[in-house]
Amino acid sequence: MFWKGRVSLTTNCIEYLRGSHIKLVDLKWPVLPTGELVGGCSISVSSSDDEPGIARLLNAHFEEPGSKARAFITPEIIQKTENDKSAIWMVAKDRMGTIRGCVASIGIGSPYPNNLPNHIWGLIDWYCIHPLWRSKGIGSALLEALDFITYRLGRKAHIFLKEGLPLPLPHVPIYFTWLKRRRAGSKNIKALLHTELRVDSYNTIEKETGLPLLKVDGPKSQCMIPFWEKMLDTELPECWVFVDNQCDIDHEKGWMTDSLVSMYAFRWTPGKYLGSKPSFF
Image 1 (tube, rainbow, N blue to C red):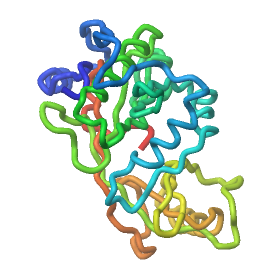
Image 2: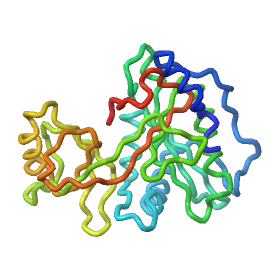
Image 3: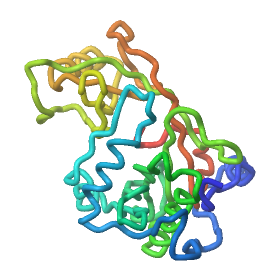
Image 4: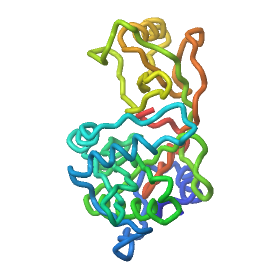
């Protein structure tokens, strides 16, 4: 099973039909994996000394070999997630101390309106196992250890985003969408500076060109689409921009359908918001 914090489809459907508000699901407290080594690796919370090794692992293996993109991570980016987003990183190290797996819990706000405290929410990101170390239980051990630690720190509700094919059953997403992308930006702009656009970096680049991949928020109204599309071309460096499928766009600008993204809930149920677009899409 991918993670023991999974909430069943039956529970989510019942709460949806009841019109329930978002709530935590009363599941068993997570426990640490037994034994000192899992698949030949030790599992621990990362330290600042681990940041270069995490970056090397992600840049080499986070994206699949046939992908047109690759991660573009530096130790400074990892440190920034810890300082700015209260990220908690877990690592799996072999007997020589080389990092063979990692995963992070990033602090986020609630995806839907609710009365639960903000500090309970986390996003599982940068889940990566070296190809030669997969199918040894390392990935499950990393997730269970992260669940154990974050739960005791009060971060009890997690979200996981899966790009591409959904997770196998019995995992069922609570929301999914297709991404759209297009080439954007200006050759005259060399760095991402101040802009009225809300932009988030995927910390990923296109292999062939080295262009960054950026997530952008869509226009606030139909009448703003032309102005918004113009800003994409005049206020950003050369890049690929991505929006979700429900975003209003000008289809004449060369937008293409990209990958499917599925969202999963762990230790909480969306209730009446099952299937609804979350705030960060």
